[in-house]
Amino acid sequence: MIFFQPLSKRDKLIAQAKATMSRIGLDLVRDCKSSVSANTIGKTPSGTQARDLLSLLIHANMSIELPETQQLSDEDVVARTNFLHEYSKV
Image (cartoon, rainbow, N blue to C red; front, side, top):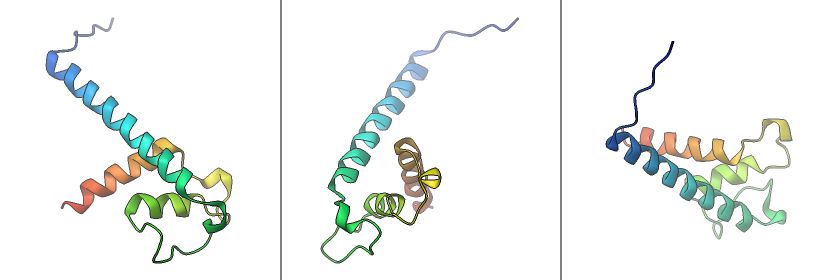
């Protein structure tokens, strides 16, 4: 038999923070995806386009050369950017 301990106040705060970060990350991804116009997909970003990590990742993920089966979900894009952000601090 498995017994679960009730969540502590700290655990609840961590869960709320993770949910907030996930919601904000997904909003940013959706906004960024909507700003990528159909005529720029599959082309190298020019100097006038955003060159931040999220924009570049979404641009590459929406490439016409990338099969749909290999494209990342919005949740995966958020997870990758979080990982890369933490990794870049090292």
